[in-house]
Image 1 (tube, helix red, strand yellow):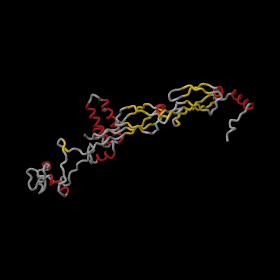
Image 2: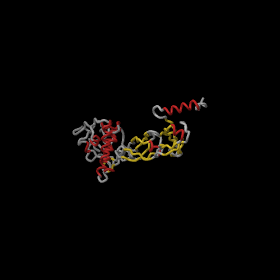
Image 3: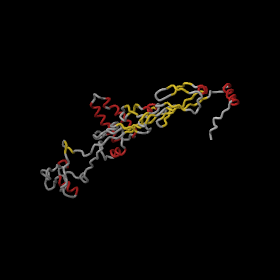
Image 4: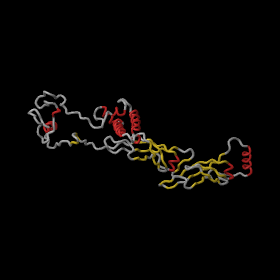
Length: 328
């Protein structure tokens, strides 16, 4: 793979935020879903994912910058100690024709034409490891090269927050979220799911750098509060203001629910502590079906009202009553 900094188009001094921003832009640009007729876009998309897999990881990025790993995340070969100073004209036991003339001995014999100063693969590993090569096996070849022994690694998971309207959360439904590669998908929100709980989308995280399965997307739910309705377990509660005359005479009032407003009957002589229950209008999930609790709140008119005050005085003088007589 090319230099990951070149792939993402950022400098080596780029911050983690700049690297992430560049990745998201390119991933969105080259995503196969947006380029179904361009086979090169898929290759570019994979290259961008692999580059971010390395540069998006602080530890891997530091290893790459120090030259400890290559662009694919594999350890770099540093060479055997002492080889760098040996070349043509070395003394006995040196490489007279350079390291490029070294060949693997198929049966443990010396390379063709080697004299007393030459040596075979068997000699090399015997000198390096201080013993015989009885346990040494030639690495398996694939297409003329060494087969990688690195097992496929899964891609990284990505955490995404989904802001869900209260009504959608209470009823259950769909919420649109933007994934790490810029794609937008609809996520199913279970009714009444605990806020902060994550929904796992398999295979929607970052791609693997070496052919493993992709990571997952973890969608964390954040509920947007409703201006009037609140949750109490599987029940919902709403405060509904009514006038003094509606409380005394009775009335029909509109009450908001998560599925739209409904009309509710307020019985005559309703007190300000009365709660009406609308069965089945709460949250429905595996835990059961809740109700909507309507708390009635009597509200007096704004400003002074001479007639209302006169009525109150007549009641106080002629028909007083004590609502607190049973209180402690």
